[in-house]
Amino acid sequence: MKKHIETLLQRVSRAFPFIVVETDNYQYTLSDINDGIKEKANGMALLHHDMARGAIGINDAGALASGVMNSDKEPALTTAKLEECLQRALDLLPPKSILVIDDIHLLLQHRDETVRALYIQCIRNCRDEFKSSNRHLVFLCPKFVANAEIGNDFEVIVSPPPGDEERIQIAKNIARASKIGEPSKEDLSEVSDTLRGLSSFGVEQLCSAAASKSGFNINILRSGSIAAVNATAGLSVIENKMTLDQLAGLEQGKKWGRMKAGGKLCPLAVVLIDEMGDQSAGQGDSNGINRDARSVMLGAMQNYGWRGGIFNGVAGTGKTQLGGAIADACKAMFINWDQGEMKGGIVSDSERMIRAAVGTLWNRFGNRVLFIGTTNSMEDIAPQMKRRFGTIFFFDVLTEAQQKPIWDFYMNKFGVTGELPVCNGWTGAEIERCSEIAWEFGIPLTEAAQFISPVVASMGDGLDKMRKEADGKYLSVNYPGYFTTKKTLDIASIRKMAIKGAGNN
Image 1 (cartoon, rainbow, N blue to C red):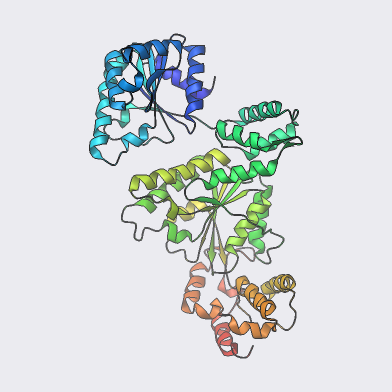
Image 2 (image 1 turned 135 degrees about the horizontal axis):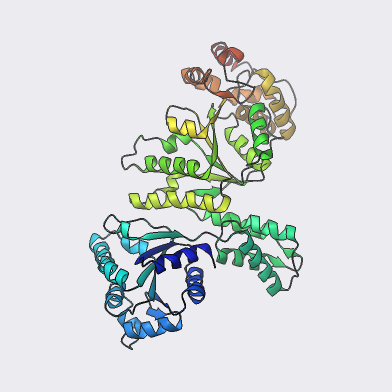
């Protein structure tokens, strides 16, 4: 028997009147409850409320109880409306009965206060009568948010997604049914790892779709696994094509990424929070959604053992590319976290979506999640975020020595040659763009440089402020130790040269 079903039946034996099971697969959970009753609570009546069909019996004792509740009439006529079903259950449901009700969260969080109050009252009326007569309401929902009026009356049990053994058994069953032979242990392990965190039904469907004469098509399984992440509001998988070997420069950041890939907690997911300061800042956060999201994320990192890093620095210096390359090195899914997509019309919608995103990451990847936040300024990053994320790299504009492998890479990529322009202090993005312009229009690099506005000039005092803020505080992504302006460029002189030389490249 599954552990959460055993817990549920234990609560039933101790006369808990209201039990919530958080699940994303109602049919499987109802079937598991029925199987558990057969094994541990034989004789207990099991009924299920269906908005279209009313309260119907699931087992033999439940069918008898349904007949009593519905007075031998068609259930759809007597108990289809939940408020009527609850009142009849209060009056007529016999002892030793479990009534399972779906989607209670939609009613208890209804926007119409009158409707919400009606269901709260109907449930409240049942509590003491049910407790004293060994009757129970079991509510199924994806995520339960307690109401202040009755929230303390509920026992909440979480139905976990299928574990390794269950996923492997489902794959074996599909293989036999599809007559593709017995897969090897290695193949079954890969199937299980790819489908981690999906519901039993989801695993079954994808295995059925991927089954072929040669075994399971892992590409189909991966596509389905990615689609399941993308279906969660605010999460989307990034198809990354950058590797650490392809990424020029950023030596300390690449070393950190290789250490992550070879470590004991190599991440299964690298989650990118782009423009982290904007997403988590309290500015304009009148309804507290950003603060709630930050609290939920930090709590999850604490409780689940998730790790993090912050990539701070100049735009165009490879922060996002390094995150993708680390995901590639770890063979991890590279996922974008978009807090804007987690905001609904009302605060409760946003709270639900933020928690659903965190739940998806936990269900799919367990404690092996690495968050990477990118930012151009640390001013809006809360101290608790800095502490929890831990490793903070600063991405500076580049010296000529740091630029050389980047110029080599992009000149080779675009097939261009020739004299380099005046480019001290350029970023990798500017080097790439200059090389691309030279290739696109068939012009020398020095001429292409006339169409580049390097941040060393365009940011002005903003760049000076950013570098001063990072001096001695954050790790350099280019060399061991802390970033210091003493080891790098004289930005004021370079800015003057860039402005003076803009027309002479």
